[in-house]
Length: 349
Image (cartoon, rainbow, N blue to C red; front, side, top):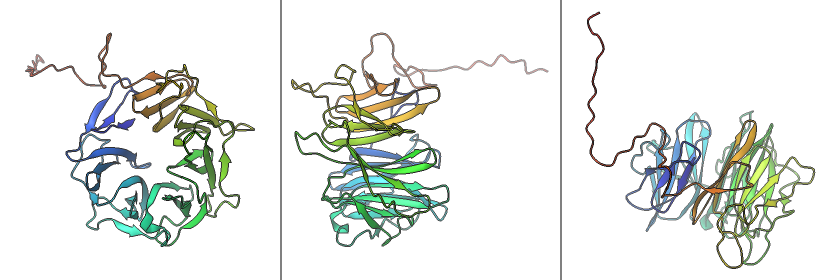
């Protein structure tokens, strides 16, 4: 699992029991990480700078990082990986439009034409999905309530078409794979004090054809204001909200209904109105034979649930009274140490 703070990118190899800082940029503030879905170890880190943004890449799960592979004079909001012509490519959603490039190539980021009337306004989110038959779908969410656009031709310029949600504040896109089907989800923002609309879902057809039914709303039971983030564990959807913590939705139910976490579930409460802190980021993973693990992130750290989002405990503590957790194969080191290795093997025969 990975998380970012304002100063570093962090990694945990034991489901949040211990964390290590794997990237502390010299210039800028880490904003998000994106792992390649099919190339083990390959990942990128988006960094916001005083005058623009930068992209860094690691091919060993964050163990090592080089110099920035791309820099921009505009804000970088999101990124997604895809495979094109046998090479890993990054698509970047920036305030100046959609950009694409292959890390390590001599060519720099190039603009992708989505909609000439919207490109200069930029995009908040980008998501990719590859069907078993090889159809690559690329979706982007336009800024200034411009709606969602979808390409079924790998995100090539001028292959995008609008698929809905115009005049809605869509900030995040995510792809859910459940069974043999894939769905594109979009989060929707809400005005202060409003209950919100939750999220919308569009099926990504394996043939590449657009779903004639368009986006379907999933708002029954939603009471969290803005939907801030989404994560999936097969048919279960976990949502981070503006004021109701983590909400859970079982898409396999006859009538899918959002279920909010209880106030005493362990997530931090932010004020006298008994509203939960904003959950800005969320991640989930299925556990065979058990409930999914869920991690939520916000201004008061990372919280972990091992019972499918019912109860949470702090997973990013920095002070411990009964233990000092370390990642696997790490040793405690209070200062300089000298280690002498004694070899007592019989070399004679």
